[in-house]
Each structure stands twice: as C-alpha cells, then as structure tokens.
Image (cartoon, rainbow, N blue to C red; front, side):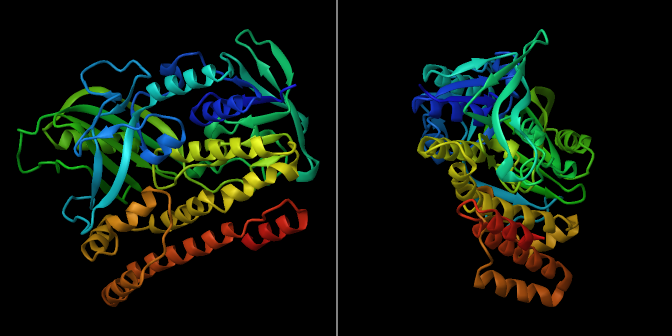
Length: 468
C-alpha cells in the first residue's frame, strides 16, 4: 500500500512537492484553506525566477531573441487581461543587465548587475502547477484548513512524532486524518510548524523581520522627456532612509513595472508611498494602474531544524527565501525538489532518516541565504548619502549584487579589499561597516556549512551552542 502524504498549502512549494511525490507513487493529499481559484490563491503581478530553476521545476523555458522572450508560454499582448491562463506564463520582456542607482539617481554603479531572470505571471504559474499536480494523481482539497497536528508535539526533538493532521471544512466541521508524513507548506505563517512545542523547530518568526512590498504596472510614455526623466533602463534604486529599495523594469517600451520593498519595522505603507512618489515625480508614468498590489515577505534565518519524525517543512514556512529579493519562488522550488528527493530515498519517516534534508539544505543554499541575511542586515545602517559614496567609489557595484540576486554569498576579492583600503583612508567608518558585514557573513556561512550531517543530539546541541 502506498504511503500517505498530507501537505498543508497549495502554493508554489506545496504543489511542486505534491507533484514530485505523486509521480514517485505516494498517495498525496493537499489541503488548501482558500478556494480553487488562482486569483484567490495568488497575487496578480509577476515574480522573477532564474531560468535554470524553471527547467528543474518542470516548466517550459521561454526562448529569447536577444531582446525579448518569445514562443510557447510567452504573453505577447500586455493589453490583454490577466486571467491566470497556464498557457501564458511569462512576460515577453527579457532582462539581462540591471543598472544600480543611488536614491537621488545622481550616482550609478560602475558595473551593472547580471540579472538573468524570467518574469512569470504568478496566477498562471499556480494554474500550471495545479494542473501538473492533478495530472500526476495529487488530490487537492480546497476550502479545507489544516488546524492541528496529530501526535506527540512537545518535548525533546527526538520525542516529537507527527502522525497526521486535523482539517476544518468551510462548514466548520473538523476531521482527523492520519498520514505517514505531514509537510508544512503554509508559507510565512508556518501554521503547522509553530504548533510544535520545541524551540528548534517550532519557534515563531521574529515579526520585526517581515517586510512589505508594493508593485504597480502602468502605461509609460517615453516621448514625454523633461528634466525629471526616469532612466529608461532596467534598474534597482537603493533607498536607505526608509530601509527600502525601488525596482523598475519595462515590460515593453510603453509599460513600466515599479516595485518597492521595506524591511524590519518600517511602516508597511512606506513601500506603497515610495512607489507612488516615483509615479508622481515622473510625468512619463500614467496615473492609471493596470494591475498591482502589496504583500508581506520574510527575510530571516531558518529554524534550527526543518524535520522531526513524520514531519517536514518546505518553502517560506522554513524561511527558504533569498533575503536579497522580494521574490522567493526559486528558493521554495529548490527546497521542494530537495525534500521530494529525500522522501523518495528515505527508508522511513523517522527523524534519523529525514535529517539529511536538514543537512543538504542548511549546508547548501540555506548557508548562503543565511550569510546574505547577515550581510544585508548589517549594511542596512547606511544612509542615502553613504550609498552615493559607496557607488561612486566602486565599493557597492553590480558584480556583488549579481551574486546576491542569485543567492550566493561571495567574499571580498583582493581587488575589492584594495579599493576598500583606499576608501578607508577617506571614509573609515563607512569602510569598516562594509568589512564587518562581510566578515559576519563569512562566519555565518562557515557555521551553516558545518551543520551536522546525521542526527545526533549531542552533536546538534554543540552546533546550536556554537551560535550562542
């Protein structure tokens, strides 16, 4: 008899895990609290995804003519309404280089960032993944909220054992469902993980580490040029006064997409106001919004473990997200593919058998994400005028940001250290902040690379205590 898998959440990570495990022969059930509608399940703007991750996740990779994407799956008519059509996954625009500007646009990074991302329609993506999962044999139960875990949910990590879950239908009726393995894919709320009374897996995310993003897509008139012309290139504008950023890209010559994100305890309305301020400042941008909205995102370290007996965590519920981006699909998919591989290969669903998922994630992508989190947290103290100086002196440039965008922490090169030493002669405080940030990130990377490979309580506790 096939082993039964219960997954909470029909988002990008949950659907990918479900499809992969159903193909492998497991009986897979996904429980989603919302209705069966891509418009309800997701936002109506696009997310950036690396092309290699599209291929790994089972998506068609759009063809490029050097300037634009084209062919199957590419949405060629921006004026057509967005319906979540799974046959129209991608925007036609292709971004290769991303310019980096100071808050006042007076300084630009000497080296542009190499972006290499595809913009995917989030609603179309959910529709596509849903069809893939159903075709693979996944049973998706909508209007079914997972409210409780079943099993032993407190004590030492080795004592915890999840045996199923309790779901609530739209009429409020509760049903207990036994499962060989339960997977929390509930996103940033981590609804199931946080029910476990153990600090290493069940701790809540620090609410001060949540950020907010706001996006708007509008018409753009490039013929209206005046002294306040916005740069008509893909670019990323830094804004440290509000601990935020502005990201601008063009779907076409006459369609502009502007987003902003704010971090930590900055009021969430600052992201929206930052974007609207940009719209008001530049007459080339239409006042009429075509689509857009706002949402919450998470930038933090993962819990110390993503598994216990009978239970695993994937996607944003486990902080599987690149802290330098507002988009977390690639990280979630990467975690989902790794989890599915581990489950396929596991002898059973004990803590010992599932632990390799921890090791592979924490010492792989997770180590780099943790290092990037530490670096970005420390350089967030820079002021707007500081960013101008960092860009003008080639301390902050597109080369480093390229690594960040792709989820890789790369330490300072000898050339970068020489530039920093020259910069330190005139700006010792700013240079030291940069050096300290990289030093802390390097130590964080080394710490996660040394994550225990197998479950052993004393070894795990020693690793925890090193961090303390």
